[in-house]
Image (cartoon, rainbow, N blue to C red; front, side, top):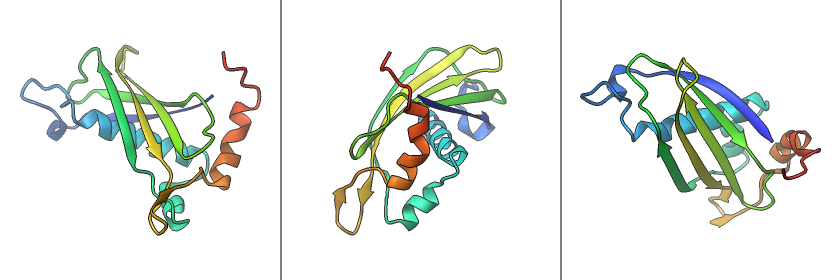
Length: 141
């Protein structure tokens, strides 16, 4: 399993009239978490794009438990529970407030896609290599 965390402060423009983080912004927070998780591996989305790989979202599921509020510092935990074997990758996201309360969780499925060939491709070897050590002793518990 691979996990990374990042922090995002809820900005006023992201809230609704009640001062709650608008539900549509949770997907953006997941994206920030994914990008930072990949960056912590020493890799970036930019490098993937330079390699000719795009990562479109093909599925998104979210569960809302309590609201994130204006000016809250939200912890975004991004988890890869399994090493991808093929073109799909699933990122699990958990968002927590400053009290450590679970606000939201979601699963975002993306595919590695070659826009020139117009087809799905496997995870680039360079990225897979950086992830493999996190799954070396995985017993699928």
